[in-house]
Length: 143
Image 1 (cartoon, rainbow, N blue to C red):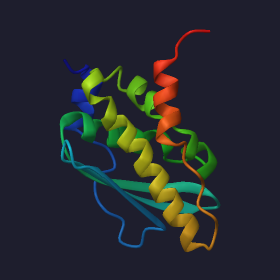
Image 2 (cartoon, helix red, strand yellow; image 1 turned 90 degrees about the vertical axis):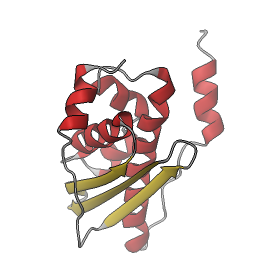
Image 3 (tube, rainbow, N blue to C red; image 1 turned 30 degrees about the vertical axis):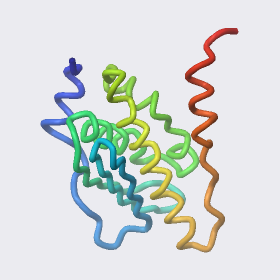
């Protein structure tokens, strides 16, 4: 059911915790499945210099948060923003289809933390892809 990488990140998640003086905090939740993610970021010179997360949820939700924080640590905000849920799932060697929404939550949570940081600096929040576009992309796979 779960890849070894998922299990490994679930049993030994990276970057767990809180950052008291975080520059940006994002929280997202999926009430349907009860997963809640909170991500804290520190930003230095436009780079994510530290990142921590707290996730309440299933193994996939925790593994997705752990992997997502690993993938964006040390990246510029622009690069971190480009992290897709697909990239998170691939880095975990795949998630069961029913758990793909966990990787989407991780992507949304990082976006929320970055936009929180931008708002605190008086900057315009970046626009997220609308949910319809994401659905479109997944349903049309013909060239």
